[in-house]
Image (cartoon, rainbow, N blue to C red; front, side):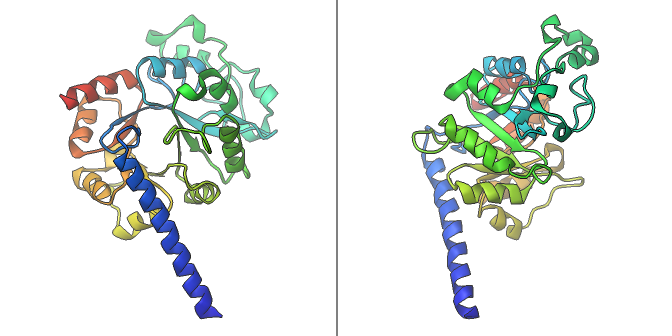
Length: 297
C-alpha cells in the first residue's frame, strides 16, 4: 500500500512539473504573449502611484495613459466578503478611516476618503480632484477597464481572509478574464504566500503565477527552491535592492520570469535591464516606458 501511494505521488509530482514546464515553454514560444521573456513588462505598482493616490481609479487610468503593461492591484477583503483594492490590512494610511479592513463592511469603507491623504503628503503633486476619491472594489476596477486592460493581482494576507482565492477566481471567470475565451496572460496573480498560489494553481493551472520574495540581506536562491517554485509559478518577484546579476541570470537560466519591485529610479531600471530582468514594478510607469524604449535601441 505504501509503495503504491509513493508511486502515485511521484507520478503526480512529475505531471505537475510537466504541466508548468509546458506552460512556460508555450509562453516563451508565443511572440504575441506579454509573458514572452523578450517582452519587458512595465508593471504599474498600485497604478501610477507616484503621481496619484494608490489603488484609486485615477491612479489606474493614469497608468494606462502612461503605457504601463499591467495595472497592479493589491487585494484585501471586507467584513462582508468583498474584495477591495488596498495595500494595507488597515484603513489608516490611505483613507480617513481607522481599523482593520476585515472589521468593516464595504458600505462603511465606501464612505471613506481615499485621496486627500495624497494631497497632504505630496503637496507638490496635489490635485483637488483627488479629495473624496473612493476605495474601489475589484469588480469596480474590472467594470471600469474591462478586457482591454491587463491585471497583475496580489492576494494580500490570504491567511487573514479565508476564501479569498475562490472569490477572486469567480470574479475573473465571470468577467471572462480567465477560462475559455480569455487571452493568455491577461491576468497574472502574485503573492508572498506560497499556499495561496498553490491553491490557485490547483483550481486553475492555466493562470500565470508569480512568487513574491522578500530578502533582508543579499538575495540567494537555491536550485531546490527554484525547482519548487517551478512546480506552480512562472516566475518570481524579489525586492530589487537585494538582487544582483548572478541572481537574475540564475532565475532566467531556469526558464522563470523575474519581476523585481519597486523600481523608481532610472539608473536602477537601466541596471536591472542590463542584468536581464523580464519586467519590473514601478510607481512611475512613464519613466520605465522610456527607459525600456531606450534600452531596446
